[in-house]
Image (cartoon, rainbow, N blue to C red; front, side, top):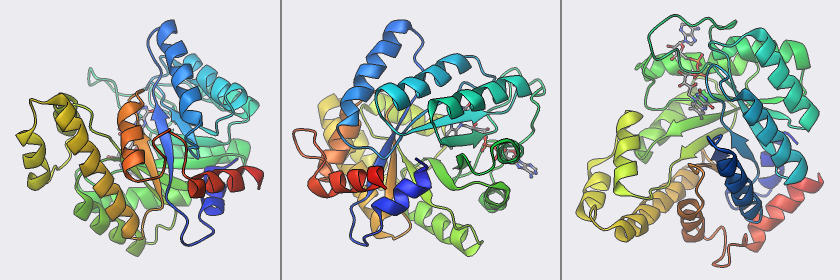
Length: 314
Ligand code: FAD
């Protein structure tokens, strides 16, 4: 089922709780793949609206992404979204991936440009930008796929100007983008200001925030630095104070991220939370528990379960 249909079905009632989804990446070993299937199977019980699997730019593990989408969709019974990039990839690889998703019953593609080669050489891909890939998917498959696009409330290494990035986002919507998933962030005020700008610019597709739970101080600091995002000083100070105590960081991080999710939902711009799980479950589950979207037995609370069931039967 298409993500946009699932979301509008789950949020038909105004007081419906926020829904959520999980991102996974392709593991490097066969054992890692099996472990991830087991984890996905357990996380199925939490009633995510969908799960998505990342794509290695250049298509280095494209077969594995396709295989995992197929297993998650057809064996584990999860609604899937396949990431697909277009830099450094032939049209043949892109079309094979789309066909594989189609054959698996996957109806959602996150259409991305991907990062250019690390050595600084020119991309040899058949499409230049994500919007070109979106147009191609539309030309080949019409409305079969629900197409997601990436969004950057805090800027992108190639384009720090957030206003220019909103123009590019609009181009992706106009090309056929149906929903957006954002980069990770911890500055909620900045995010809400950005949402207003996005709406004022005429972008109407659902805004799905990318939520990165905090599991350790080291991983939090590394990712925030790598993604070049702003961490509000009060947020940073609280984590700094407990940085030598892993379990304290996890508890505090859970509270901070849950508070952030609540503010997002209260803003009215967001009704769905997308978790970057990093192929782990504990930190995401702790945030969901804190938000009371699942209970302490890791079962969805009744209202969330209703959302899932309602959307599955329609
Ligand atoms: P685009 O929207 O095409 O934009 C990229 C850049 O191109 C812009 O910043 C701008 O500088 C330029 N540009 C775009 N349109 C125009 C135009 N009309 N005129 C001039 N310049 C233009 N990467 C992976 O490899 N695999 C993944 O699975 C993956 N998943 C992701 C999931 C999410 C939610 C996000 C936010 C990112 C993900 N990425 C992934 C990273 C992404 O591929 C990179 O950030 C990439 O550099 C940009 O991709 P894009 O789709 O946003 O590109």
